[in-house]
Image 1 (cartoon, one colour):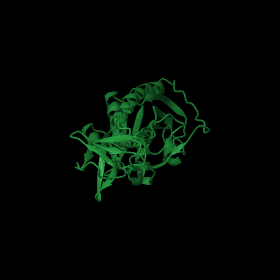
Image 2 (image 1 turned 120 degrees about the horizontal axis):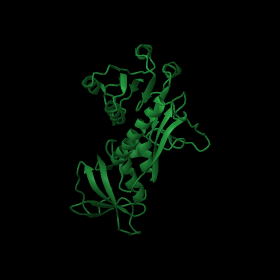
Image 3 (image 1 turned 90 degrees about the vertical axis):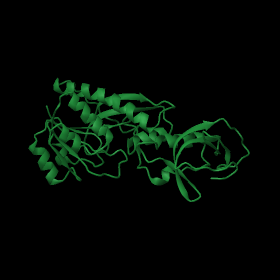
Image 4 (image 1 turned 135 degrees about the vertical axis):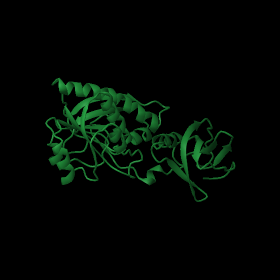
Length: 293
């Protein structure tokens, strides 16, 4: 089965590695160079060179040049994992088995942008790993394979990302085997329970000390590496926060943003509800107790 692969993020690389390990017949790869809009961007060209796979840079996967290149490869199927553009009809209709996409949520719920970030920021206890047949909509094609993934209280963006990759790699093995054996089962998505998450902005990462400590903690978890980090301002300087813990401090008559204590391990800040320990910041800052952030 001749496969064209489209992708440009870390997840794309891990799925491509899995295909290589499976000895899949990858006849071409479309990737992107220096894509700053994705914190987890991955240029797949060097990996393709190493494995002698034809590849192309494409800023627009729907462009006539890219479409012509893909058609000449005569793919039976296209796998599109980690691509920020919508695929148009001329591309979707090229392969016999269609185009398979991926979304790290429990479709049809939580379609749209930044699903790993929002799942953590919102404090969800579960997410998903979903492969689906792509159509002209956004994350609403027929579901091919879906697994639920538990989110632990210790998870951050990096650990959840790795959980999703491990589950998706196993799904990919079964998925391609089912296609070859003609056992693929498609399940239509229902729109009634669906929602679309919006694109995250810089403002979403700004810590407001009037928030509850648990909300700030979840924000830090969701925006941790490989994403750009939550932040606050201290004396005009933007301070990134990479790791926090909920503090046992329970004072209710202290205003949000006041620094309650500074220890060798962390800085404890009063929040709207509760308090939080700032364990890992960049740059490291040395406030004094009683200051306000």
